[in-house]
Length: 197
Image 1: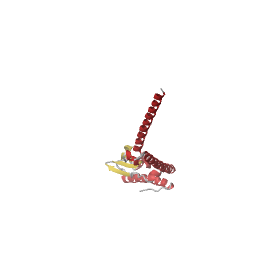
Image 2: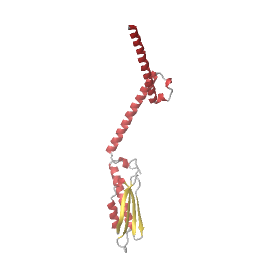
Image 3: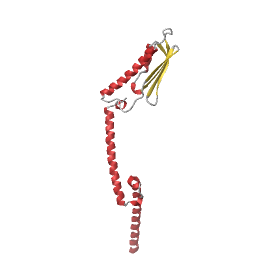
Image 4: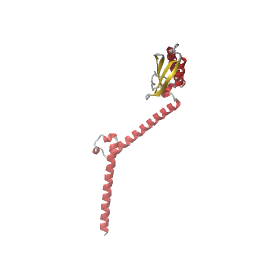
């Protein structure tokens, strides 16, 4: 009875060892696929010890890379927090603003394209048009995908005999845009940030 029991134990140990080796081989194969310097070569080309050495070196490389990226991320976050207007003043170009005033028969059409940073009030545009002797018939604004704000406005002459001062309206709208740009430049200067043109 004892002999059978011992043989059983021996067989059991052999099976365990075989399973252990098979499992280890699978793990090494998986490890091999994750490490670039190993995955580009045939699996049988490296010994287990060599695979472990390559893996340790790769892990160290990744650890250093993570530290570098963390430092860069922290620098970027600090920069954004210290200078909230940095992205709008440097490195990110904003779409140019344009003003079009079309003289229609007894009225005018205004098309003003600005960017979302300039904070132009639609009521300011209406006031300028009305100061030029016009009465606003309809108007509105919409925001485009590329951070542009498009204002459109149709107006007729308040007094047909006098008409509308189209040139004056155009000039004042241009000044309105320029004032908005100057405010942005002032913010950038006080933050000691260079403006890219």
